[in-house]
Length: 245
Image (cartoon, rainbow, N blue to C red):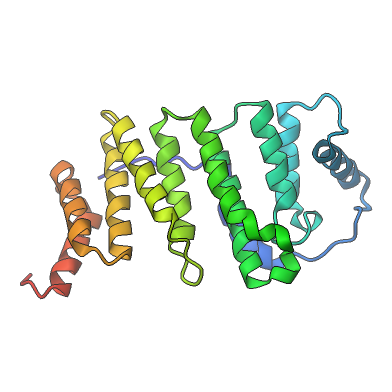
């Protein structure tokens, strides 16, 4: 099945942050470079509520600034400023769908970093998983009828629900609900429906429910008999259950 997948700048940010965070150094505050200092002061003013005439582009620029200069968003790994700037953005303007998932991912990452090192992140890290869900719900109010929003939300929450060390099991029901809503809204978007069905199958397998997983893979094959993911998964399930190939 050939499917075009669009990658937004916010999706690319996931990869940038995941790969670069361990390499970032702690820089002096405030920044000494005049251009960086001007941007820093502007962004700090927006967060403090003292900046005037804040445009949509200012929120985007400050979000990019704190992502590109994560060492000015301390404690490192807390992501408190970049998420704050984007929540202000949400309240002032309608933003791109993927930005909600990025902010939820940052909040969940902050929670995981807090679990690793509570002293470094501080007490604010304890509630960041709840804030991630709240962010998904905040975007849901704006994009309630958008299948893509619900699909992307489910995928984002999977990271936390099935984390190898600190899984958030209560997120599983939210994920399944998001996939179900996306399928109801997908209409004639066959590819999106299949992606959701694969997501439901994947989550069932992670929970050890191979019967439910198989049922979802079979639904995929009804729509796309050549789907390699579903075919390979069923072969694997057959092997696990001792069925002849």
